[in-house]
Length: 102
Image 1: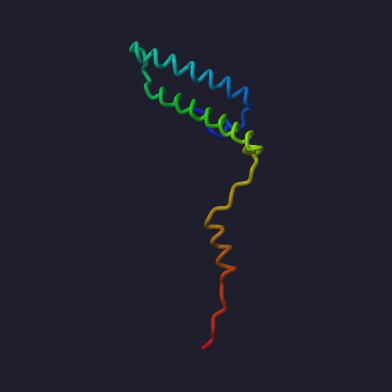
Image 2: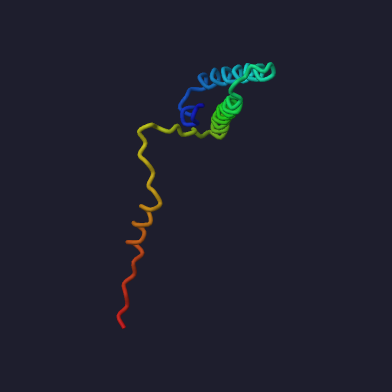
């Protein structure tokens, strides 16, 4: 199973070859299923999902090209996003209002 982030980092020609390879594997798995030779039927679903992921990444790039934008590729050294709990702590300090004396 390939992660979507790995697919986004690949070049278009690598994606095309991976798509052809996955489709060929899916065809072979279907033949094995039909002839009763397939032991791991869950592999069919995994390969189908891989094909869908590859097609999704390819379509995202196609749309980005048409719109004139570049689809951002995630970098492995990107800093982690702040968690909501961190934002709440920072917001609480800014929103304090002085107490009124009676």
